[in-house]
Image 1 (cartoon, one colour):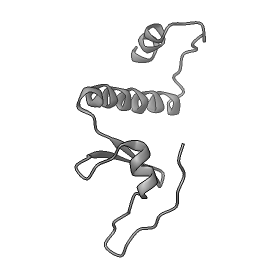
Image 2: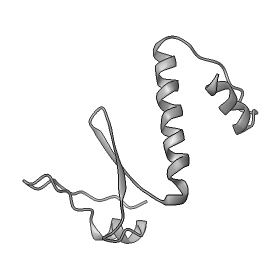
Image 3: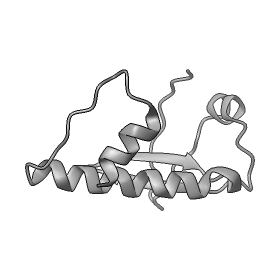
Image 4: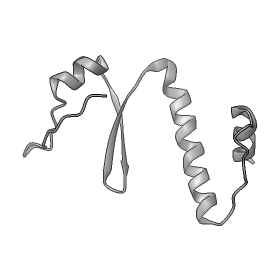
Amino acid sequence: MEVSITKMSENGQVVIPSEIRKDAGITPSTKFIIFNEDGNIMLKQIKKEALRDDMLLIEKIRRSEEQIKEGKFVKADTAMSDEKIDDLLMH
């Protein structure tokens, strides 16, 4: 994992350092989804084949966080399959 420091310009632009771009395979036409979680900003490359899965995962996480805040939760066993855990989270 590459780590680097950058800063925002007066115009609100942030430069992704070249070593990070090279390591991630980012080109000038790369598009991103931008997340803001309590001031922590995350960029995620948009890849057509993964976009739908990413959006579904974001929605599942959002619903799970709401249920946790409401005190609603289920226990999952680590031996359970991913599909079984998804089924628990979706109901």
